[in-house]
Picture 1 (cartoon, rainbow, N blue to C red):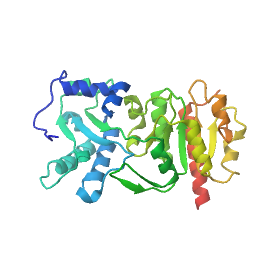
Picture 2 (tube, one colour):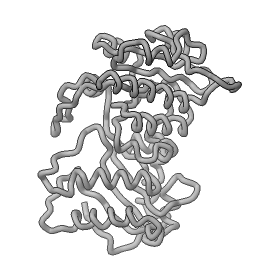
Picture 3 (cartoon, rainbow, N blue to C red):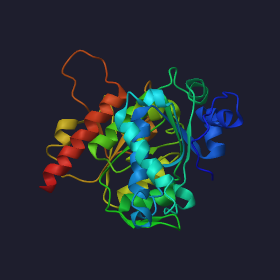
Picture 4 (tube, rainbow, N blue to C red):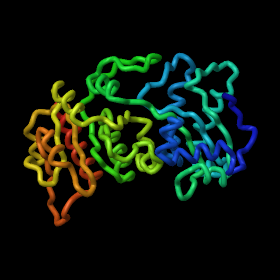
Length: 323
């Protein structure tokens, strides 16, 4: 792949621009195996991850198969004047990409190009372009890799193998449709120290632009597994000592009691649809139906807020028990 920045992309109808714009659609992402990261927050994290993997040369090792990798980066220099930290990362990337002594493998190469504001607007999905867009490869994390990740065994894709410690906390997004809620849960799970975010079939695409913007860079920190069969997942985790908790407004167990009096165990949190919650069948798969206490007069909590409360309650309970 040619790595050049001499020419500015200024044609919003160019084939590369059209192909990138298709990544705003599910079919475009599926066909190309790529997704859009727009704006300084997610792009900053994409750049940091790339530098972590490749700035030290071959000694840095291959990237994890569970994290996205940069394919292309487009930027407007005028917009970057407002983000000095992003500009500094870009300068470091240039230093690696254009160093004649550096021999990057195919997975480390990035198409880097300056573009006009009009081109960036045509490429992106956001209503207002923020002057920088990354195109990233979607990592494949299916059940066969997820089971190894959850249980802490060796994982890899043939070219990369790593030993991960067993995970202890994961949200399971079940038929959640709102991209903002899905992105917020990914961001919250990352902040709470969860080891993976799992989505069942019927949920919003976690690689959609609105989800990526809402997650504010967390796609580059935490593995994401989509299209996972719920019953198969629960059978696996329960057989390995995990508990399965359902966040349910009418639950029979209080969150306070669950995280105060029960032993700390690896935990899956089931999170249901915005309007209908978890189905009866899904609730029956859980060990406990857990309710978040309501001290005011609100009828219910937003699912992303409830997810944050539940994940943090479990995370703090697990850390107290480990002390």
